[in-house]
Image (cartoon, rainbow, N blue to C red):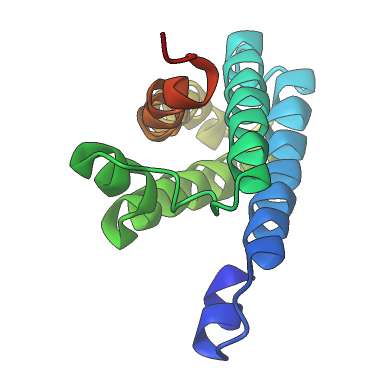
Length: 158
C-alpha cells in the first residue's frame, strides 16, 4: 500500500502505479459484482470502469515522460482534487462506506427475509443508492482533472 511505502521511505514511481492499479482492480471487482447481484445499476460499473481505464491510460502516458500519477497535475484545483490528502480521504471513505454498506445489506437481506425487519430493506437499499451516487460523483470529480490536464500531452504546438 502507498501509505505504508511512504511511511517506510520506500515510495517509488512503480509502487505508485502498482498501488493505483491494485486499488482499481479491487474497486472494479466490487462494482461489477454488485451490478451482477443487481444491487447497483449497470451505469455505475460502466462509468467507474471507463473512468479508470481513461485515467490510467493518461497516467501511463505521463509515467513514460517521467511523471508519477500525482506529479502530472499542474493546476491548483487539479492537485487538490486528485492529490490532496483530504480528497483522497473523501474518496476512500465514500468507497469503504458504500462497499461495507452493500456487503452488510447482502447479509441483512438474507437474515431479515421473512421477518418483520424485511420492511427496512427497501429504505436501506435507497440509502445505499445515495451512497453509490455520492461515490460515483467523487470518482468523477477526481478523474476529470486528470483528463483535462492531460491535453498538453496530446496537443502538438503549432
